[in-house]
Image (cartoon, rainbow, N blue to C red; front, side, top):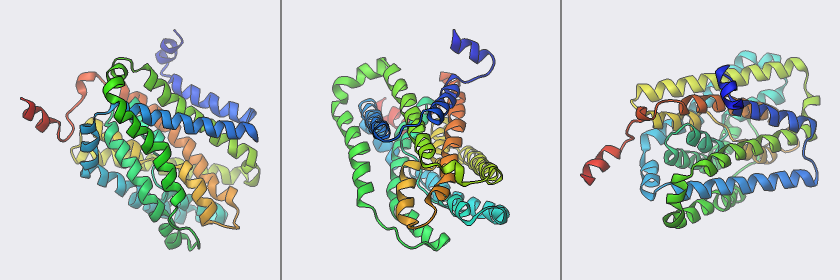
Length: 340
């Protein structure tokens, strides 16, 4: 009844849940042992998310997603070409009004890899090409471990950084291993998950709420908000929102002009418009030693919140499209012909 009432007024219940999570984190942030528990809960939720994806997706769908080079190329171009160019343009326009640490933070946002968890979760909620999103977001993070430090050196003249074996291990243990286990068990549990989609939906949405709570708690405990003026904070928010809106618009327009299916468009929009805070904060610790790290990662934290809210709304809009509107992704037509 509550969901129907909110929908009547055009209010997304999940967006309210996100706002409530931020409010809880602001009033009751996790710190000390609580923060460790929250981070462990995020790790478990993400691992469970990828296990369920592995159990639900067919190996053929994963392989087709990996070989969908046009989609992967467009997401890669958005992440490592479009974002940096827009970031340089916006910081050139507004750079004189912000401290150098915030300018560096805005550039840093633009050269980070895409998120993995939320990109795939929102793609799933929106009924998009999850297999392609999984491959695209994962490949983006693998390239990001090399490209992000190089772009920091090139654009920010920062010393340090390099290839992180710990990040590779994290991706392998937290994402790839659960997915492979799900693939191995798909024969037995896959049909059940296809019939009962509520568990996957709960993990999709719940994992994002956990990430929001843990990330916002970390910022509250670190006292980031006391290190910046309201004017600076407002301008950073404006730049982040303009940057996100521009990328969402361009990726949507490009995917439609290039003839991608609606499912592929969803994967492109969600994977190509995101920036990973989970990768970004650990990278910032390495790439900006001895600098005001709190101010440098502040634009990333704000952008992360903005992208979650915006993509939550977009995902629900995509999900409400009629089921018959689904179009064939590249390779489906050939596969159907081969079966006949």
